[in-house]
Length: 378
Length: 240
Image 1 (tube, rainbow over the protein chains, first blue to last red):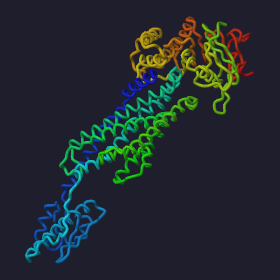
Image 2: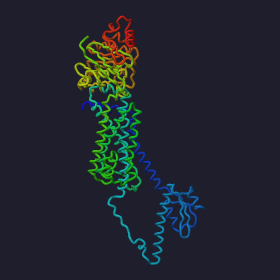
Image 3: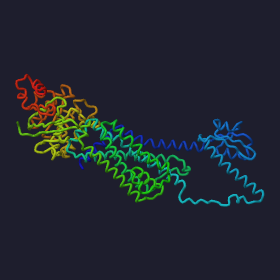
């Protein structure tokens, strides 16, 4: 193992002197807070923004006050339908017994204004109906014969936070582990061949399996460092900003105690697997540029499983799905974050799957490393 | 000839569809400079790569100081140092760090690494740039780093593959002087080159290979025979 340690130390020193890798780690630490800040500002702006309602006819008494208090500005127009196309966010024609509403569903501002209008009109109609019943001596309670009393089993704010984390955290973790080690893996393989140092390295008595082990160790370390930098900065950012769904009442999003060890374990497995895989692809390449072409598709392959939680939040797959690398990591992390429990069978299947991926990649890289073609191809 | 350090016997090697070596045999002795001569593509580099175990023979055997390259490749690598024309060094490591890395990988004991690295730095007159990053070194300085890393574990067999092809006159002379000095220390020096003038001046014995076969062998004087110089003899042999 001495040779593996010698290679590991040398690779780490070289990587730490490589601007490309340092920039990748620095950017991963900076990018997450920037993205979260932008999301926060946009959501805050959307929540407080006033929208214009172009109207014609007589506004029912009291409705104007309700509309203004919910951020809907009234503006008299001649033709509400025409105005709703560009001039205002929503067009409304008040008539004696009905209201005609005009809006363009393709405009997000129209959708938000419509939701607000429907809410206000619902409250206005209910209040009017209750007042009319009261005038006739009838209890307004008959309008709601079945009252719903909610008893949330967990904090709705916490649930919203977990929902956000269950998508964002696996996404950040997986992409940063993968991209954080890209440059180091390519530099350590294709770069070594391009610089013509590979031949000298393979002429030493050090067994090639140990040389490879040292390289995998170094790339894994850098991948994990990039992921820790990104996730650390994410939680720092989350402690400073509020996000949509959090209701603004809980400015501090935290990870539950179950999710932390699961995240560390999954991150370690992913880092070893990705390191072996990118080193294998880098070994196939004749130079750094060719290596980049080989590893870039990996990014897209990993993004798809990471996005599944966004599109299907309640995706509850059978145990067989946990055999699919990367998807299993996303699902296991989601389970730990949202449900606050460890699903042991799923975690065991995930571990076997990711360890197999890492092992097979390691064997493939070792095979490439011991082939004569490694030298004669160049 | 002195006692054989490297024995190559009927070596054959095919790379892809190209039969590069077609039954090459020669012996290089301790304390001599042995020239492996031939035009570009003759198979000189493939021969050296096979001796140092980077490639495996398809047929035939290679023995280095009693160790067969197939049966004991690690033992062979412990006893061989190779300098090539392609002076690849780790650019973000200093010259000293480059040499130290190879010393450790070549199994120099931890207690001896510093002393042996210092020794080669002094021997090759590298003190002025030893702490400089390799990316800032000149070609001649990088070649010295390449030599230093090849000899830092003090191997008994040294192989030089076209070591002066990318160097200026002064740097080339230093390499030649180094080979002569190594011979004086009892090392077996195998010098692969197509520069026949260098070979004639330096080598105790030479083997000329052409299209993967040995076409001439012996001392430079014996190979030259009655011709004006080794170049004439070489041209006659490869055109025959």
